[in-house]
Amino acid sequence: MTFYIIRRILQALIVTLITLSAVFVIGRVVGDPVRIVIGIEAQEERIQQVRDQLGLNDPLPVQYWRFISGAFRGDMGDSFWRKEPTMPLVLERLPATLYLGVVTALLAFPLAILLGATAALKPHSWADRLINVTALGGVSIVEFWLALMLILVVAVQIGWFKTSGYGGAEYVILPALTLAYKPIGRISQIARSAILDELRKPYIKAARAKGLSEKQVVFTHALKNAAIPIITTTGDEIATILNGAMVVETVFGWPGVGLLTINALSRRDLPLVEATVFVVTGMIIITNMLLDVAYTYLNPRIRFQ
Image 1 (cartoon, rainbow, N blue to C red):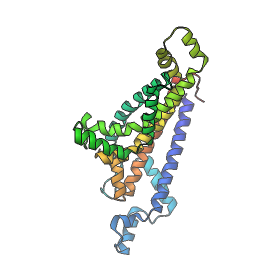
Image 2 (image 1 turned 180 degrees about the vertical axis):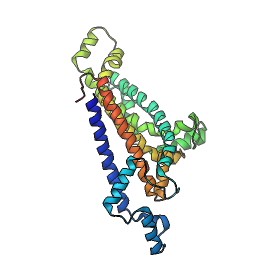
Image 3 (image 1 turned 90 degrees about the vertical axis):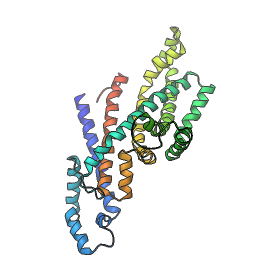
Image 4 (image 1 turned 90 degrees about the horizontal axis):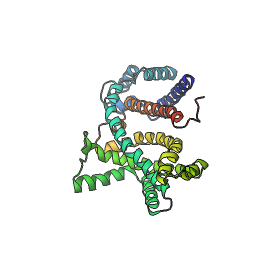
């Protein structure tokens, strides 16, 4: 167990290092950050002065080491836009994104598993077809279009929820529903397929022979053993939720990391973009590690190696 956790931590560090390296290279390829900060009309003497201040005249290996070591110390430099350290700015917005993500997960994951199990309970029925159509819509729909439609219909015309802002249920429900629809579609499809595979196995025949109802067979026996592919897909969908938060937070004016990233990109604030990428990458890696540990508790046949 201990060796497995250490190995996963080392793998996470390698993935983080690769991600940071890619961010470093892209940041140097897209253009001169100095000209982005002070404008293309600035005098060459002023440009060189700012480059010296930012350490951009140092050799690339020196810049790379300073960038990587700073990232692991939590120091990603100062924001060009806000003129203050980037990591406190990102961490200040992180609770709002986590709040939205948790509400989305609580809406999406139980509902998706319930829909998948219901579809598997009565395959080829009208309920199965309706759930499959709903799942296909979730997989195919564009999030910003769905967000605009929810604002127009549910918030503006019906008046049930707020169109933008941060707060309780009246603010979080619409952005959470927007983010939840795609994971509901994908996870429900995986759950249906995995449960149907389990229903063909001998132990299910034994459970039916004992007189258990079909609901007990599906929800008590088949669903538990179908958990591994469902959990794997759930891990992927957590990354989808975090990535989709950029668009959804922008549409709904939700003050999270996603909206901060969009604002940083629009202002070409490279250090702030790098900080948001670092934090989101860390969240995804930690989530996947926790899911890996959960596998052994869901399926005793899996051992840490």
